Image 1 (spheres, rainbow over the protein chains, first blue to last red):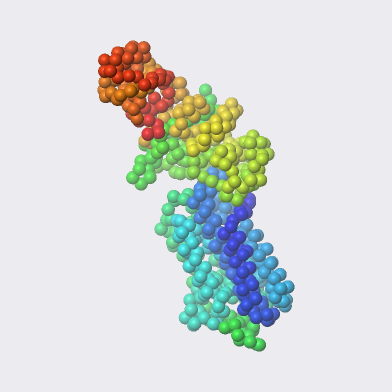
Image 2 (cartoon, helix red, strand yellow):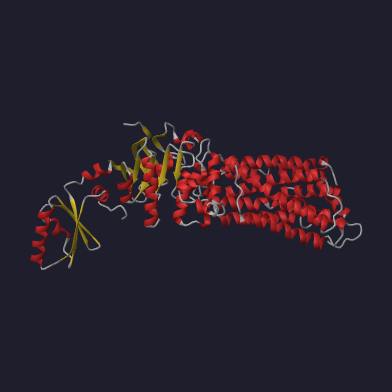
Amino acid sequence: MRLAMRNRAFLIFSLIVPLLFLFLFLGLLAHNDPAAVPYRLASVLALTVMGSFWGLSVQLVTFREQGILRRFRLAPVSAGAMLASSILSNYLMTLPTVAIEFGVARWVFHMQGWGNLLGVAVLVTLGITTFAALGLIVASVTNTMQETQIINQLLWWAFLILSGATVPLPLLPGWLQNVALFLPATYLVAGFQRVMVGRGGLLGIGPEVLSLAVSAGLAFLVSQQLFRWEPEAKVPRRAKYWAASALIPFLLLGIWESAHNRLRATSLMDYLSIQPKSDTDK
Amino acid sequence: MSSAIIEVENLTKRYGDVQALRGVSFSVHEGEVFGLLGPNGAGKTTTVEILEGLRPADGGRATVCGLDPHASGDALKQEIGAVLQSTALPDKIRVSEALNMFASFYTRHRDVGQLLERFGLEEKRQAFYSQLSGGQKQRLALALSLVNEPRVVFLDEPTAGLDPQVRREIYSIIEELKSKRKTILLTTHYIEEAERLCDHVAIVDQGRVIALGSPRELKQRSAGKTRIEIRLARPEPDGALGQLEAVSGCRSTDGVYVVHSTGVPRTIVALVKYLEAQGNELASLEIAAPSLEDVFLELTGRRLRD
């Protein structure tokens, strides 16, 4: 089954925005210091993966509003298959962007080594599934494109600023760091930083991988439960509870992290590892 | 007679305060074109969407190919094809991609190349959906509805909003399907469409079937009541023309008097005499054989497109 659509929103958020971030982060923030490139690339990878929630939510709402989903509903296709295929096509179309980012980092910005590619692959896969499914949930709990865009903007800016992707987590005020511990994006960014900078194996990002895997599964199940074919079908009240349940793994992890400070310690370690010569990009 | 492939009994459906269906019943036999004729809001689309499995009914019973549309899921979807009233495809999907993708959903499907040829879409096979004209989009929708060799095809207002030439193209496609004994359930508010294409028609109004039969049988109800459309130089009160000889009913809309007569020559003679006496003149006079529009008018007192 194929549902690879030529979607402008997808192109913008899966290719153009990540590449802009790439040149911005690696060109301006890494200060031509090859040692800082892996750390900044980790942020760009995380943003690329997080962008998948945007394209898919816009696509699903457009399809529902234009009556496209109604046409699919007439065919023997289940909601689960529709959603899984859209996540899969999103995944396959994001992989070239990730490859381009690695290529540019290595050959344009002189990154040394490739980081832990297995760890990157695992995080890209789980991350896209989680964030794409979150996008599908957003599409299902909103009634119009306007509502979808508002929620997307709020989430995007929260992910962008609080996750450590733009401002390194150790530089955020302490109370904001505590808030960040409850965001899925924070774990994705920290995971990428570990495998790119710390060169940690999969065990080193165990909690991140586990939480992303659980929430990928949970978010997908929830998106299936909430899926609506018809534009006039209203969002049921239980939808909000279902949507909230997708964030349970991060709530638990946030509480655990608040008590143990593991993630904050590793983030600080990864951040300091790129500061031996200069501390200028604060 | 062949057996019923669609059976509908006492179907009811309510949307909030609106009772969309108030006990709709009819049956469709294999190989026939059955029309649901009625004005907008009569309940035609709701009925069809219940039969397609897109909406549950509140009450009553329906079977399509022996299956309960709401409970049978994919088993029914394999057997039916449909052109929906309000639907679309993604703007950036190509014509051949759309057909190939939908074909891939079904266990049994037709050759996509043949469909493109039959529906005159070969030249457009690489075109994006957004680049197609209204008629081409509708031809693609028809091709998609047949991609799985369905036993029953639902066509919900298949020519609504299309220009006359495209409408005739769609008619010829439906006539070809009819000649191949494909079972078709068609909804329309066009009289011409129902009279030309349908073997049987259910006239639907306000959620009820108010008349059922072949177009010929239905029109026979109005037999002996020929419609005369009269335009006058000066207006006359409705009641006056209603008093003329052999007139069974009269009403006027936009300066046109529609008179139903059981004896046309007598009515015309009486009309001419009456107008002479009033010093009025005839602007035009048209005599029409009864149509399904007259049947609807007679039953409801309204025109189909009022």
